[in-house]
Image (spheres, rainbow, N blue to C red):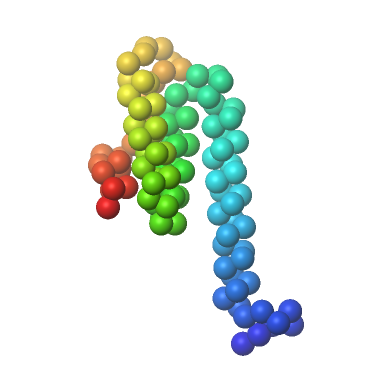
Length: 101
C-alpha cells in the first residue's frame, strides 16, 4: 500500500528508524564529549557500552568490539581510582562477551 507521497509504509518506517538511530548515537557522542574532559569515567564507560550495544545490534561487529573494549578499559580505570568521581560503573555480568557472538 502506498501513501500520498508514493512510498510504501515500510520505506517510511525505515527512514524514521534510521533517523531515530542517528539521534540516539548523536546523544551518546555528545555525552562523551562532555564527560571525557571532566574525567567522568563511569559515564564515559556507559556511553561506550551503549554505542557498542547499538553497533552490535546493527551488525557492525568491528565498531561494536572497539566501543566495548573501550568501555571495559574505562570501567577498569574507574575501579583503580578512589573518590566520588571515580566510582566504578555498574554493568551486567558478561555484557562484554556477548558482543563477540
